Image (tube, rainbow, N blue to C red; front, side, top):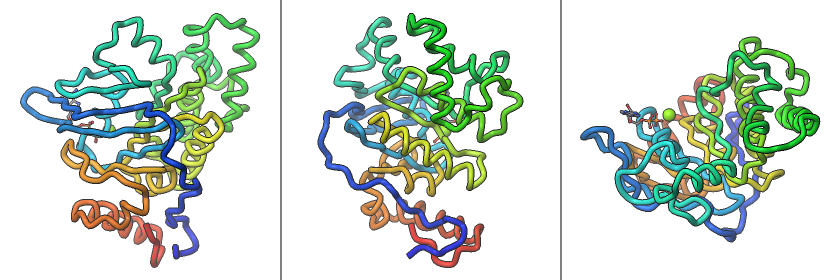
Length: 278
Ligand SMILES: Nc1ncnc2c1ncn2[C@@H]1O[C@H](COP(=O)(O)OP(=O)(O)O)[C@@H](O)[C@H]1O
Ligand SMILES: [Mg+2]
């Protein structure tokens, strides 16, 4: 079992879920090039309603590019992306706008408006995309802040927020419109282990309370193994393994073994754990 002390014990507190439910996100032989460079090489995956898929891999392997293709920021050069059963590249602007309302994205940068207070940052999507009464929006903003544990920060400016608070604020804004589908790009990058654990907990809680489907892109193994129902390991723009956390742990693939085991050993050494398991 995992060593005590610092929680490198990469435990997954979600129960196994039946692989039922409709497919919400699907990539089929997705190809993305930048110039001559193939950054996504025939990526295929499917995520079902309520499921959390983690895409992990080293820096530069194409994770953020995949995420951007899946939300329609980048147009694929080959293959297809289907959201809620509809082909994303085939959508017109009206359809795309409608689909985007059902999606929440936590970008790596946080992408917050520095001139707006915390509360105003969260109210913005509600003002733009709904015709709710301002008094209702005010209540919803407080609810979203409560959900991410930032109730007391409503009147702060983003510059007054710590890194962990900024992530949670980005998350509160991502869920402002109660999305069915949530995307996270490196949600714990740059955070200390305690704040990372809090963010991991929020990702799981949001998935459970909103029954949201989640795709988490990360190079952080602890986050990956905590939140995943299934995981995909990416290398040089290709998915080299897809499976449950225990299937990934047991993978024979040399790259997967090196990535998952090698990195975790380094993490264990860093935190002084003797026999952390993955
Ligand atoms: N807009 C772009 N134009 C050209 N090259 C890009 C662009 N975005 C990403 N890349 C390249 O594609 C590769 C994958 O990038 P990225 O998806 O950001 O990787 P990851 O998120 O896994 O770190 C990198 O080599 C990166 O330099
Ligand atoms: Mg990235």
